[in-house]
Image (cartoon, rainbow, N blue to C red; front, side, top):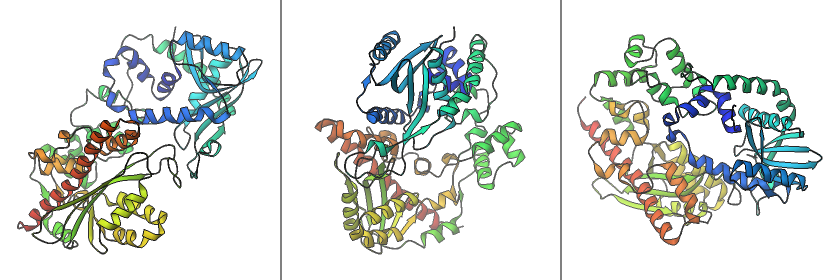
Amino acid sequence: MLHLSKSRYCSAVQCPKMLWLTKYRPEAFDAEAVNQAVLDRGNAVGDLAMGLFGPYVEVPFGDLSGMIAETERLLAAGTPVITEASFSYDGLFCSADILLNHGGGRVSVVEVKSATHLSEMNIHDVSYQYYVLTGLGYTVDRVSLCCLNAGYVRHGELALDQLFTLTDVTAKAQALQEEVAKRIAFLAEYMKQTSEPLHPIGEQCFAPYACAFFSYCTSSLPRPNIFDVSGLQTRARLNCYRKGIVSFPDIEASSALKPDKMMEIAQELHDLPPAIDREAIRGFLSRLTWPLYFLDFESFQPAVPLYDDTRPYEQIVFQYSLHYIDREGEPLCHREYLASPGEDPRRGVAEQLCRDIPRDVCTLAYNMTFEKTRIKALAALYPDLADHLMNIHDHIIDLMTPFQKKQYYTRAMRGSYSIKHVLPALFPDDPDLDYHRLEGVHNGAEASTAFEQMNRMTPEEQAACRENLLEYCGLDTLAMVKVWEKLREAAREPG
């Protein structure tokens, strides 16, 4: 008998081979493809949404048969709102995020998503639940998808009825019932195969979710290959793949990609010396003036707004690092700011930024769009600081530009102009510039998660986390200083 959960059913909608590999090749699953922070965020949003319809009773997670029995008991007792209500029909299992019990075998299903928009896969999710419940003899009056309202702005206590948006998708779920039945019948036969089924690489490997078996399914391809080219759109990768342009020699022979990507291919194949456009770099450096400031922000995006005047998933800056040099030959100085957990960090960031960065000074950021966007948002929020903040905004220059434009490129950059690739390429033997040596926080995603979790830590854990965050963000701006120095070295050389 075929055994399915709603998550496995949805994975099979994307690609049936995912389901087969989960059963027969579980060791091939790449856990790094799973974003645990996203899963945790989804769980938190789901927990909050449980109260959307008033008092509720949650079916405790545990043994499936116990969950199903408890659901039956709550339904029989007339419990109006049941969360994690669990059902099994002919080997098909599902738990409804929210089940509204109307009595007499009539129910409504509400599926909660932590996104701010709905996707086609969400419809497949609830269609499967509709199939299970109607198969058990329940009358499903309504099927709804619940997601976060991107337009909601918090003022005071959370207003759940405004934070969440409900969309009635009953008709769409009903229209897919024949397709669900056919897919389940197909999967019952598909999963009987003991030899690995053939399935070509295609769009389903990337959308709607990145496949955790992609490395396994492409293990027979030459390395590196078209899927290793940095920053290339999925459509372009697949177009080349389907034409047989797979290996780097294939790509070079066909000249299939744009010049900047062909530079990456040539560097990789022939181990060429660094490509350095010294004249362009000199032009970039001529725009910089003393004193020189190097700025980096860290932010997090709470799904549920934590502070007044914020929306779901709004970027909230909680930290910055600032290295600066007053004039040529002067020592490198450093300032930093890190908010305390539990407080709205934005006012503190804005005020300290205005104290730390004078007006009319040249400030470098790496990928400046992020810093400029956040500063502009702070200026809109705090009119009394807006003039100074926008002065900082207007004097920011992007240190990423020479690398983005391939004015300085080496093989070790692997086609990327991210500072996490540029820095080790320029300074491969400097342990002080190695992010791997850091404790606890090694990248922006980990910094966001760390700050978001600090409020739940013990004082000792908070102190350690604070040191980790400061060291990480400080390395980001120190890295910018080192990259700027390397550009200056290149500009001084002839050519």
